[in-house]
Image: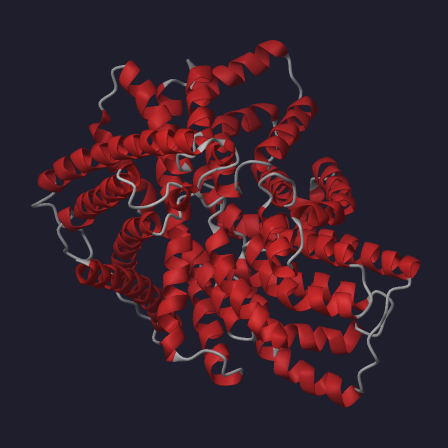
Amino acid sequence: MENVLHFLNRVLNGVTAVSLAVMAILVFGNVVLRYVFNSGITWSEEMSRFLFVWMTFLGAISALKDNEHLGVDIFVKKLSPRMKKAVFVLTNGILLYVLWLVLDGSWKMTLINMDSMAPATGLPLACVYGIGIVTSISMAAIIVCNLYRVLFGKRSVEEFIRARESEEELLVSGQQQVMSEVSGK
Amino acid sequence: MEWIVFLVFFLLLLLRVPVAVSLVVSAALALMDSGFNLDVLPQKIFSSLNVSTLMAIPGFILAGVLMARGGISKALIDALRAWVGHFSGGLSVVTVLACAVFAAISGSSPATAAAIGAIMIPGMVEAGYSKRYAMGLVAASGTLGILIPPSIPLIVYGTVAEESIGKLFMAGFLPGLFLTAVLVVVAIVYARWKNFGRLPKASWHDRFVLSVRALPAALLPLLILGSIYKGIATPTEASVVACVYSLLVAVFVYRQITWKDARTILRETVNTSSMVFFIIAGATVFGLYLTNEQVPQNIAAWIMEGDINKWTFLIACNILFFIMGMFLEPTSIILITLPIFLPILKLLGIDVIHFAIIMTVNMELGMVTPPVGLNLFVVSGIARAKLEEVVRGIMPFIALMILVLVVIVVWPQLSLWLPVQMAN
C-alpha cells in the first residue's frame, strides 16, 4: 500500500512539475518566435492556460497531502487535545462538503462539454473540467484517510492541526535551508 | 445577511478551515439561502483560473526560487559589500539595497527576507551590529518584495480590478524606491549614532571583479521591468523570460543548480502557486455572493447617505487593512475587500491605481506585525531568535513604514507619475 501511495505521489509531483515546465516553454517559445521569426504558435496561449488550470488543481492535492492549506491556527493551537480533535473532524467535514460541491458541478460540466472543443487546441473542454473530478476525489480520499488516522489513534491530531499562514511560507522553508548553507560556506 | 456571511467566514477561519474553503462555504450558505443554483460554482472556479495574466505568478515565484538557489543573491550581496560596506552603516545599506534588487525579481516579501537575511543577519552581527536591529532591518526591507515590481499582490489586484498590470507595476516603482531611500537614510543615521562596525575598504580590483560577477544578476530586474515598460512583453511573458534567464545564469554562470535540483524547484513553485490560486478560486465564489446580493452597491449607497468623504474613507480603509494584515496574507485581503471597494473608489473619485499602492503598503505592514506577520517568523527562523526579539527590533521600522504610508496616501503623484508617463 505504501509503495502504491509513494508511486502516486511521484506521479502527481511529476505531472505538476511537467505542466509548469511545458507552460513556461510554450510562453517563452512564443516570445522568441514573435520577435525573432515574426510568427507564433497559435495554440500555445490556450494550451498554457489549460496546463495552468491542471497545475493549480493538481497542486492543491499535493498541498492538502502535505498539510499546506492556507489557514490561521492561532486560536486552535490554544485548545485542549480533545477540542482540537473535535475541530479537526468539523473542519474536515466542511472540506468534504466543498469537495462534494466541486465534484458534482465538475461532473455535470464534464458531461455537458464532452463534444465541445477548445477553439485553438481542438481539445475537448471535458479535459479541462475533468480535472475537477480528479482533484475532488483525490482530496476527499486524503481527508477520509486523515480522519481515520486521527479518530482511530493511528496519528496525533497535532500533526494535522498546523496550517500554513502564507503561500510564501512554503517558498521560504526551502530557501532558508539553501541560504543558510550558502552563508555557512 | 451580509454581517452573518462575514461572521461565518471569520468563524471558519478561527476554526482553522483553509482561507479558500472558508470563502466558499460562507458564500455557498448565503447563496443557497437565496435559492441560488450551486451547480455553477465549479464553472465560476474554472473561469477564474482560466486567465492569462495570473500565469505571471508562478513565473515570478519560479524566478525568485532560481535566484535564491542559484547563488544569484549572494553574488549581488558580495558586489554591494565591496562598494558600500566600508561606510558607516554600510552593511545596513547593503541589506536594504540587496532586498530592493531581489524584490525586483521575486515579487514576494518573505522570500526576499529569507534570501537576503540568511546572509546579512550573521554578517551584520559579526560586524558589531545589534542582532535586534539587524533582524528588524531585514524584516522591514524584505517587505519591499511586494511593492517594487514585479509584485504578486499587484498581479492579483490587476486581475480583480481589470487594470493594466504593467501600469500597476510602474505605480509601485517610485514608492518602492522612496521606501528604499527612507530605509537607507535611517540605516546610515542609526549606524552613525550607535557607531556600528564597518568592513575594510575593498580594492578597486575587488570591486571590479565582484561587479562583473554580479552583472548577470543585476541585469535581471532591468530585463523584467524594461520588457514590460517598453511593451516588448506582457507581465506573463516577462515572468517566463525572467525564469529562463535566471536558469541560464544559475546553471552556466554561477554553476549552483544541477538537473537534480530541477524537480524540487518546480515542485516548490507549484505548491506555492497552487495555494494562491486556490484562494482566488474561493474568492470568486465569494465574489458571486457579493454580486448576487449587491453588497458593494449597498455599501456605496450607505456611504452616499452618510456623506462620507474621500479622506474619511481612506483613513477607514487603512485601519481596516492594517487590522486584516495582522491575520491574513495579501492575496486574501485583496480578494475579499477589493470587489466591495471598487464601486466606492469610482464614487469618491479615488484613483484605482493609487489605491493599489495604498493597499500594498498596508500589506507590507501586515507582513511585519504580529501575530501572523510572516516576515517576523522568517527572520526569527533564520536568526534562531525568539519572536519577541524580532518584534522589538521591527517596532521602529513599523513607525517608519506608517510615515511612508501617510506620504503615499496624501501624495498620489508619487504612485501615479510613472504610469501617466508610460501612457504618454
